[in-house]
Image (spheres, rainbow, N blue to C red):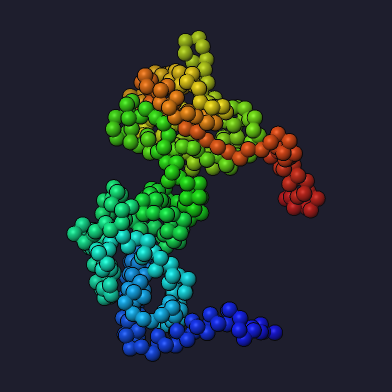
Length: 411
């Protein structure tokens, strides 16, 4: 039985308004001429897509977004334009995805978001470029500083090379949409584009990094790397640090002990390593160091494949205290003297505390010659009574085995 809509309801009024606008637009010669040219451009893009599927598609979407914006600004075709265009393109290209009403709005938004990077005054550089000229002209204009005028104050302060924002064509369309919908400015967007390419993130990982505000946390730790490491290595070491680190994948009590935190991180190594960042290779927990007749143990030891350096991570469940630096400095010296060889760069220490006062940290690092970075971290805190009520991993495993036995699911 079909749905009966009331004659005067909002949905019916809006639908009639949109379809009326669509019928008016399709009668216009200018619209039909533009639609014919656009269809030709799409057909050309289909041929080129076999050679460069993703970049060609995104160039097409960017150009279509620019044309839609231009038509809306320079014609009086009304609010039904996108509905009519979607209907016509889907009829012409029934096997092609991407011409839904929603996706045409995304193309429009995509163009508007990045337009400050390739607009000169109020003129779009993505006018109807013609079929075989589309890719060459777009890329040439993107790469030519003569055609770029930074018209937003936000853009003027961006330390951009022209090839930086060509990377919008490298990542998938879904990634691009997630970025423009979840970020607020071009600098953030370009940061996440670069990180996506660098780390080969899936869309879900990208969205997680945006939601946990990696942009704000990235490279924000207090360190002495500029004073203790040579320039190329110090820049990379600073970039790998975050503040705070997000360990929300852990569910720990408010009064967690350092050994419990350490164990929990290793038990969740699959989530821990991505939060640390690319390049960390885990070597061990409570790594034993023998100095003379004395034995010492670092919390966590890693090797960073890009820095070519051992990396010690010390965990503290309290606020930062200056004496923490002295102990970590000792461990760094021991690894440098007893473990690393001539091919390795100086060992780096990372101190993770429940909280910190940045001024106190800076003061504590002033006379330290070993490279050390200090960050805070957070995790999901559970009160002791809630944590006690939750089943342990072993209890959950036993329950699962019992369930399988009861239902004859075991081999």
